Amino acid sequence: MGEFDRIVREAVALHEAGQYQQALQLYDDAVSRWPNLALLWNNRGTTLLELACHAEAAESYRRALQLAPELHDARVALASCLQSLGYLSEAQAACDIVLQAVPDHAEAHWNQALLLLLQGNYAMGWQEYEWRWKKRRFTSPQRQFMQPQWQGEPLTGKTILIHAEQGFGDTLQFCRYLPFLAVSASQVVFECHPQLTALMETLSPGLTIVAMGQPLPPFDCHLPLMSLPRLFGTTLETIPASVSYLQPPAGRLPFWQSVLPERSGKLRVGLCWAGKTYPDPGRSIPAAMLAPLAACMAASFVSLQVGEVSAQPAIDLLDLTMLVQDFADTAALVTQLDLVITIDTAVAHLAGALGIETWLLLPAAPDWRWLLKREDSPWYPTLRLFRQQQPGNWAEVLERVAAALQER
Image 1 (tube, rainbow, N blue to C red):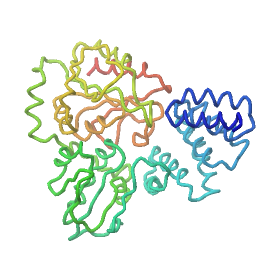
Image 2: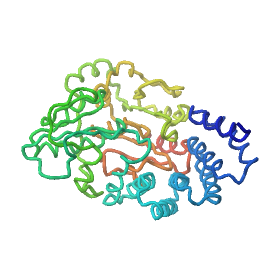
Image 3: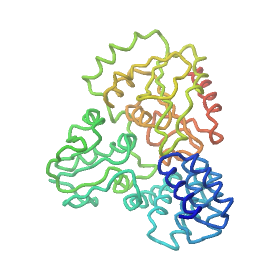
Image 4: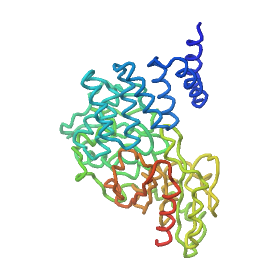
């Protein structure tokens, strides 16, 4: 095995092991020695993308495409970088080039879906979103059943299975459609994450809730949860945005009311600041940056940060999360608060679904569901959005939040 092969294999292995900085060092060395090999520039871009170095990744993909214009995956990845940098028309153009050459390129369709939805073009965006099932390494497996997939036909006398997909936040956001199905179907079966089942029991009396992995009752047709907006023809104007479509189970409330200290006249504020680093490390905020919130003496803070975190914020924070067993517990805790301040994670969707006043802290390149430039959300009437003005600059966001908290 030659020197080139050895370096590439080692870099690929490091990348796959999540050791991106070490992989990048090898790719930097390799492109300096073999600058005319598109594969190296492409792989280097992919590693930079994992490190959220979008501008550098974009330049690396451009170098790869200069050498090999037919590298369609590199052009799609370039589109992802451009979207993250806010260059939406350029990202769309990159997807268009790929789809002109390869009309069934699933990754290009997926990127196009995210671009359309981000810009509020739901009519086309939901159609393109169906390509997720053909995308490589999609986060959820496509379910296969003998029964047909529902295409929007009448459900009178039928039982329909809706199966959750992707993450907790996706389920919390899109479960709002299930009560509409329960109006016409004989029965609606909803299969979801075990951590959500107790909470989903409060969604509608006409639902049968089943945890993933448990036996399913008989059904006539099925549909993945996030295909419902397409079949309902959802636009920005027709989003079903009723406040409080979820409630904490009544049996959970007495416990959480008993463990919280008596109210002292201060505003009770829940905080969540860190999420999973994959697939978007830019959603988390270093705990130290929350320090400006401590200046608001009229607020008492309660942690909603479930799971281990590298650091705690330097503010007086009541942490009862070790008592949380599932989302029904978190819901019962959240309803005891006056305000939730959170990053883009499942807590935001939970608080919004419960109708709790929520301040959502967003990176400069937000997830598609938060749209662009607006401070509100058509999905959740009680949300207020605080967006980064410059990529990575959370300090300025927290200054605005602290000022707003003083006013509140």
